[in-house]
Amino acid sequence: MHSADDVINLIHLADRPGTSGHSVSVRVLGRSQPGILTGHDLLDCEIVIVAEESLNASFVVTLFPEDLEDWEETLVGLEARRFATWLNSGRTPSMRFKPQESGGLLVSVHDGPSTGITVTLPLFVLPPTWAAEQRDLLTRVREVYRPDVVETSPGAYEWRGDRHS
Image (cartoon, rainbow, N blue to C red):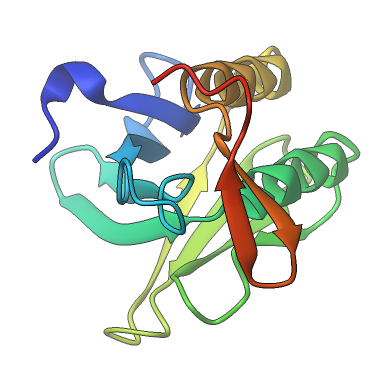
């Protein structure tokens, strides 16, 4: 079980304080299978959607190390105000980001593998520093959950030589 102290955000997009109260977060709860070679670098996460007091939804997600790289690439597109998707492999809920002409962002989470539910949340007024904040969160997750396993050949894994845990 993960404690609240272990939780860090990979993504936190929210309207400016004093506006809608809408937010979308991807919270990293911890390693999926700590100490088990093939599952150690997987991260247990949850996508959390909040719309004031009317909606509070969460979706369980397990992230692979390559999902963090995909998020970094997704951010590049979002900074250029382009439509983007993330986690669209079909194994987890997917996220879609549609920049709005007003400067806001429409965020949809589709839980295709489990419930089939799609939740779409408008973020009307993002702070001007939102993209830099997302990069800082990604950097922090990478520092806290550094990969400890290397694939030496297809299907063969070993601990990195500098493993410290």
